[in-house]
Length: 335
Image: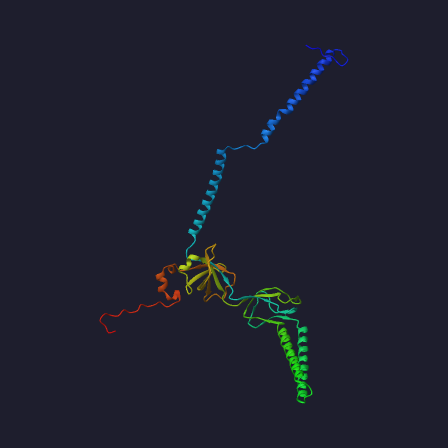
């Protein structure tokens, strides 16, 4: 064994030698402890890797659950369709006429004579504007028209005396025509200071208040006509095989619990390609005066309407006369 000497050429003492061995062992142990967890930590951080067979199984399981959900939805839709009555349809009542009254001129509102829910007659005054400015403009136009007429009379008198030419007369006539047009313009503006009801009806909403200044085109009132509302139905498109204008049916109103009779007046001109439905309009017969627009209910059609023989044999339902067969001539009779 080779002797170990220090820098001075002397052999180290036994205690120093033991301390050196101890420190070397401790350093080797620390390095081993630091290096040993690395594979464990790396292995713990890595995600588990599925085999090809495991991946296929997971995808197949997901697709199977999706197919099961789709099949359940289809079964539910089929159950709902089977549970619905084939001769009923939902509908909503609409007003025969409705409008939003808007201002035709800019000005300040002086009075709105109706409130929400109030009834009014055709021609009744609904809204009045402050017309002071427009009336002054009309008076000014009338004064200008009177002056233009006096100028024209004077020009014609001078023309008869050959004091002026025909051009001056024509210019005076043009000024009178312009003044007359201004009178008509300002008269129409003054007429728009008062808004009258276009038909008998009721007020749905007041969209402006007295003393407010509005611009031309601003909404003032929402109104509906006062009369029996019409009925709008949404029916399956396959009803077009037997549904015709003139057919009568009953309509159960949800809000009142009553039943009214209605008649089909028109069938929609287009089928909705997504929902496969078509709109149908109907008129309410006697007893619909108490109904309000917006009420909904269920329309019930007679099941016999699906039979073509019953449809053609009942003129009261179809609304058309039943064609009668022509008598066949008897053989041997005179032609």
